[in-house]
Length: 169
Image (tube, rainbow, N blue to C red; front, top):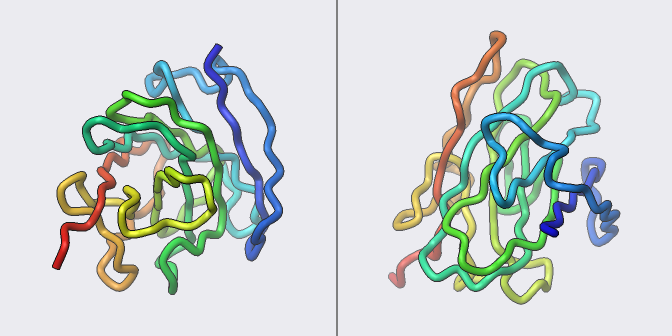
């Protein structure tokens, strides 16, 4: 059985992780696959009636690890600081993770994804991480250069991107 875990954390939550196991069919829709991560925002400035779906592409030979999906209203000021987030154990050998963020209000957002390989709740330089519009070969880790996107209308196009390890300088 594949397990999906979702965290509903209020803005500013730090080490407190409330994990709830969900079964795979709970997400459904075109983003369903062998492993799907779902985020259900709870912040009053984010909750609405639109969904964001997409796929996050991973580096080859992924060894598995703790996957973190995050959503920010607009641009975050600091790397990895998120308004809403979900965590899940990602199995080894996958090359992508479909996701769904349910119930989002109209507005400007940024999305973060990262793989915490050693599960220490930090993203070291050797761990794949980044923001929307990055690729596996060129992940975006600088919050001043990340791209935001608009949520509006009734149906959104998928928001796909890749995460990876930054090449050495």
